[in-house]
Image 1: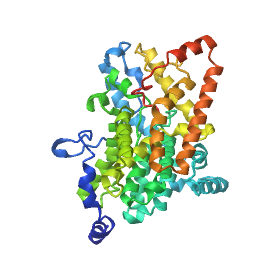
Image 2: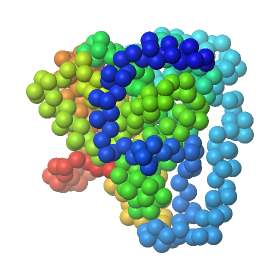
Image 3: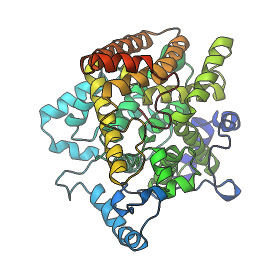
Image 4: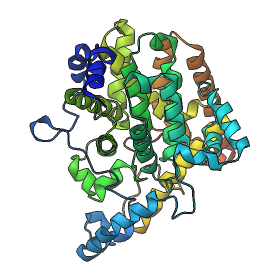
Length: 451
């Protein structure tokens, strides 16, 4: 891009950026991990492949790893990631928009028809993923960037954008039942619905929209399929790197930064602006840490009680984007039952896989991960009661309320009733009465990374 074009971007497209940057940067408190002299350190894309507990000793509770095996596995990592990334090696077409012409015209037509209704809450992301041949995240992001004219506004290079989105999609592990690219696409679609809320939409700048969609798409990138407590008790290097705090979220953010730099998507922007975008993305992605749920909920509730939210302020808009991303990340129980149940079963399957690994290697089984004692209905009822309902009730207040927020609460209450019926149907009456009498009063699954 010519120097003239860069100057035009700085002077026209981003004229309000400098006014907002300092204010928003205050949100990136000590939680945003930077290197020496405040330089953000990006992690190499695909640095950490799937957790393979075969490299752990049977005494894995001490977190010791066999040195010889570690060296063998290290030599295999690059090949393992290559096999994971290469669609050709797995007999599939490359995951790029250009590959869609290989699909049947009927499938393309149905996918396009679905995109015309992408702003509706009953959008079936599973069907859309099938219609796009597993390319739902890239296809959806390209469509939404066009809807908001972000490509023109930010003068983005289409080749670089496609490269970046392809990296993000590929760095989600399809082997994960839940934390995969379909989940990322689902969160992105929900985020789009929230960005359209009348209370919020009229105040959003193009940069706000850009950050909201990018954070939604990349918020769980390179998720290993196990939660933070697992990484800590096995002394995984990510836990050490981030000092046992927001371990996964920090990795998702730093991996996103690495892909932004590798693709060169923001290379035409002034250096201080691209750094600021990276920091704001970090502030959004780190907000999805379930261990910070009460922190954000209390602040949100105080703002609503005091009626002091001013969406003319960049810092307040950024906070609402954080809340919107948190809502999008855990909105599965607010979907129609047919979709909600699929997500619930998927996340519990991922929990159970972790529990099976922990049992196999004599580790303490994490909460919600024991298939013998933690049923899907019980997990979902606790999740809805202690995590989802409190947040979405406040979101309902914020929207004053909107038709969408009312619809989500209606689905939430119906789904909770459905899970209660299923739990009762599969629980003996004596056990049922005992479990109800001793139901915990605290939050369920702290640190369990429930969707």
